[in-house]
Image (cartoon, rainbow, N blue to C red; front, top):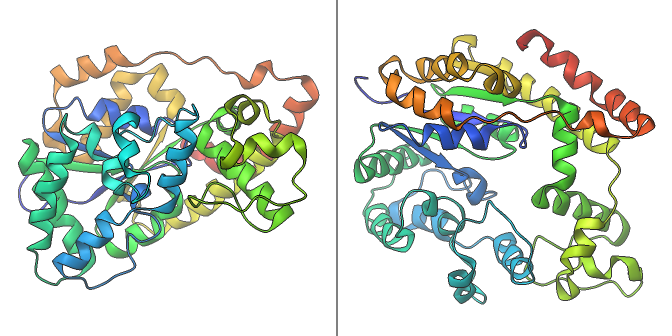
Length: 347
């Protein structure tokens, strides 16, 4: 690779194998795989443009209320894998809120995320004013240099919705779109804590006008049904949260909508800068698919030793939607059909 790196983003609906891909790429000696960076910074990631160093640091470090809310639920026993900072240590951020990169991104890069966060602060606050995408590129390059890598990629969960700002601010970017059978997405999403929070939160908002998991404090409605009391942060009960029944067909319909919107956004990107990757193909033919991916990223990343190591980490994941009851399975298939049809040309 010569000259500035082409920005590279891995996008998906979530629950589609992008985390697995990010973890496999992180094994590559030349790749800095940044996980959940733009997800952690949402919704403030692109609100200031241009921006100087001190104000850019506020973008990167200002605590997000939802992370503080998550921490309260994790204290009560909820496992949120995307929150990577050790929970016992994170409790010191109860009142102030935890910086977003500490919560989600830096713990995957180093055993001393606090030290790296402080080093990054010193670097970022010294930056002159510039367009925000240039500031991000400086940060990514600084992290590569600091951690001994030469190529970065960024992956955030459910990031198909970010294709518009990413392609706007990084017009030369490449995108790897990881997708999965929508029926399997729905089964996985229904169990996944963050997506359950989103779905239950949407239900609360429709019923009571506000969602319980977006801010550290939540005013419990006086008419909250007794069966729902274990869902709110003040009286959160992990078992109630995990057992709460969520119909699966709206999840399949939401997936189809995400796929339709995401593919429309990706169609605006030149075709040579988009790679569509089917999760099931990565499981069935990991050697061919992973090599296809790194060659798309940059041909200089072709590395047989890494490839062998990565392939050995891939595990089969048999389909689970087929175990649903027949009527539920039929409703789910109908809900996912529009998205599945749109993806057929990439399968």
